[in-house]
Image 1 (cartoon, helix red, strand yellow):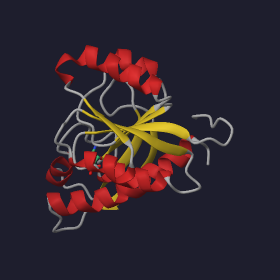
Image 2 (tube, protein in one colour):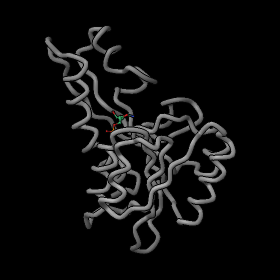
Image 3 (cartoon, rainbow, N blue to C red):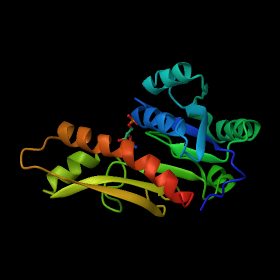
Length: 193
Ligand code: GRF
């Protein structure tokens, strides 16, 4: 459980690499009265990430980093997170794997959303693999991040039914719509709200 200090919202950074639809939904949620978090920083490894547009639209600071020298960059990011007094990190379509050194500094304070019913289909191409295996259900999971890919403690999951004529893109669309609801719910959940 992440503790709320007084009535102040917990400063949160969202890490994105792509479209940022989960970032958009988290920003919307953060502005509601019931939200225990505020989004104060957007971090990306991709200068072209579409999601970066939500920085300007919502007046949230953004920082983009080239992850080639990962260790160095992560230390830079840790420094910035400290300056912004960030207490929670939400990974939302962030395509880089954070090192143990980084994870230790934010132990129990990094969340991720994954488009499958973990522990099934860790990693990439989840929808294709679920369809190839004739699964009846798939879904999405919000979990804490640990040093093993998509393996941290599960916070919440949402199941969706796979139809007979389901395609990769129809399934992705259906699951993404659920992700946008699940991530805020999982955040309420970790604050015991
Ligand atoms: C989502 O499906 C998320 O589960 C996965 O990457 C996708 C990101 O989508 N980790 P978006 O950038 O939030 O639109």
